[in-house]
Length: 95
Image (cartoon, rainbow, N blue to C red; front, side, top):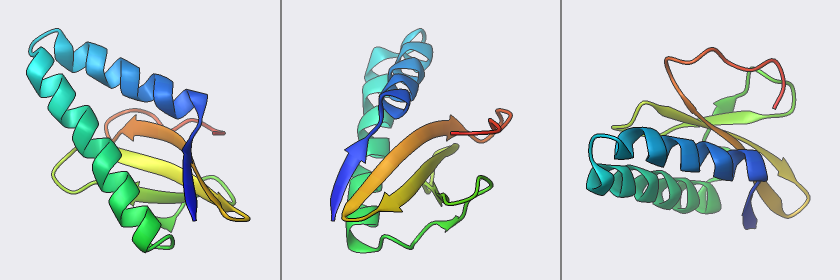
């Protein structure tokens, strides 16, 4: 399966980096890299690893050690990463 990040998910990563980077650019880079690496490693090996999503047709992967949830869906041979959301934020009605 091929993993693909949507524009919204990429923007989420940019926003995460910008926010954390206000205090520590090095920490921002580590967090974003960890999110990307763990998402790619876990989902390409076990696509159904995430729990059923709050939005119909999606799944949610919790990244251990970080307060973020990866919202994704599987279409044909693609794993689409829809959003990267902080656990304290209000969940959007659609993705």
